[in-house]
Length: 322
Image (cartoon, rainbow, N blue to C red; front, side):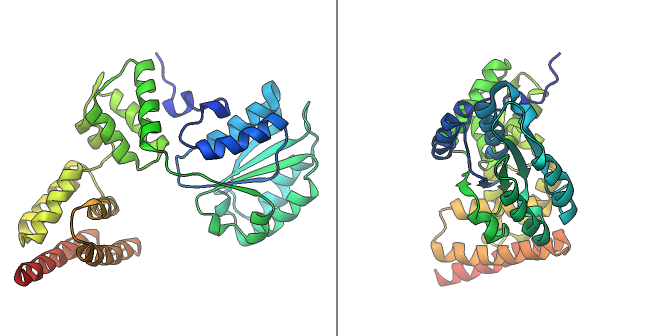
């Protein structure tokens, strides 16, 4: 029985297998051909291929001995200055094996403290002859300028829909899973450009049955259908507060959604709706306030009900003006 996690099973082995980041891969292939790289800084949203690209680059440069000359560390596990002074420095100072240099891949580098980053910049200089650093982060603004200036910066974008669709179809064929276009659309919707999330959702849904439906995707990812969120907003704007509140109850119970999940989907639906721009501005401004309050620990049901109440007030004002 195949028990492998699909995210790992279909992780790209070479740069040619990385999808959805053509501009980045085109530049990196030049380094792979020359078998030499500067220090690199990968930035972008989660699930866009930063780690997979770093490993694929190491494979292309080092070949069969890539594992002897590549180490992956997660800065969010140990983010203080000691990890730079000891673990990173110990690996950096040892000689490479059958290769011109080694690669240290530091994932989530933006989790390093300012002191740790300051120590890291000196380490990058001292051991540059035998070691190259690849730093990965979600927010490049959280990396100090001295480190940014020492690296070639590569910005990863959310994976395009077409690239994601073709790859998901390939996985379905290989795993003997039936999926229709609507279910694929649902996968792409819930992923938001995060390839890892899409593959994990696909594997989770495949356990429930050989034929995957949109309902299975939404249920397993605790995501409401776009039309359900659209209906929630419409009910409130029409002045039906209690109906909107009952609909919100059903979404949170049936789909197991948290307040943050509801806010995220409300934002996506408001932005993509056909509302006029002035109404979108008003709603997103208030939704941002709701999101902030939830982040600060406010009661999610009270805050969501308050947002629905605000929609009712806005809807009635609009009705009077028209």
